[in-house]
Amino acid sequence: MESALILGDGIVTAYRQHGTAIARGVSPKEAMAELYGKRTGIVKGKGGSMHFFSAENKYFGGNGIVGAQIPIGTGIAFAEKYKGTKNLCVTMFGDGAARQGALHESFNMAMTWELPVLYVCENNGYAMGTSVKRTSNVPEIYKLGLGYNMPSEAVDGMTPEAVHEAISRAAEHIRAGKGPYFLEIRTYRYKGHSVSDPGRYRTKEEVDHYKDIDPLKMTETKILSQNIATEGEIKAIKEMIKREIDEAEAFAEASPSPEAYELWEDNYAQKDYPFIKD
Ligand SMILES: Cc1ncc(C[n+]2csc(CCOP(=O)(O)OP(=O)(O)O)c2C)c(N)n1
Ligand SMILES: [Mg+2]
Image (cartoon, rainbow, N blue to C red; front, side, top):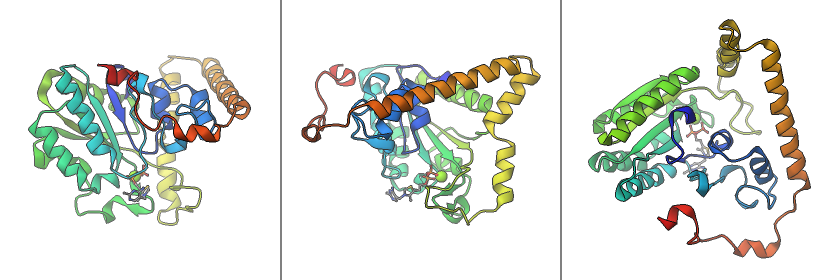
């Protein structure tokens, strides 16, 4: 997704956000320290796993309230249009969140006002233990945009190139001033919703099928078969990443916890935040 965006674009998403935050510019150290609740974390240890936020990267955060970010992202897009920029706001949500009523109000306003918003549904098949098919008689989530005449597509989320192409197509449309775009990106959640979820609502065959077409695995195979990199080079990259994670962990372990008085700080936006200064 990031390979098709520019830094001026905003992103707002749900609680499955560690990857998107790091891709946006949050360092692994700041991300890990936040998971530890340490003062060196990206929001000073006060947000935890679900509330990363980085104003300088226009990363408007995770959200623990399912679907609440859909109107927020629509509002950020309104601000971009109001200020006359060419930036867009990527507003991400899950298949479960797609069933929230706020989606319809947001889609309606965004289309009426031709807002620069790219709605991205990460359809991983389940909302906790509830499959998409059990939440509606319209399991093809991209169709929710069609009632508003919003350009809407389903995308193979297991193929990174397909995601890049779809985001590029959508971003071009939005930057040309033509209004919103909706992508339902079809993917899968390998693990349970949380550690307390044994995942009994799906079969081992289903999970194994998606592991076979895992995007990381498939991309590695493609890189090797097209001689883009050698096995040795890929191994070196993996070792570098492991080192980076080990360093992030050591950094988080060694960092101080916030003091009690810090509870009273940073609760309201400050005037020197870059996105307010404009
Ligand atoms: C308004 C609201 N209702 C219920 C919950 C409890 N809840 C947390 S995650 C979740 C499932 C959301 O599924 P989906 O949108 O598909 O996202 P995924 O976890 O698959 O990424 C639910 C119901 C919540 N956090 N907020
Ligand atoms: Mg889901």
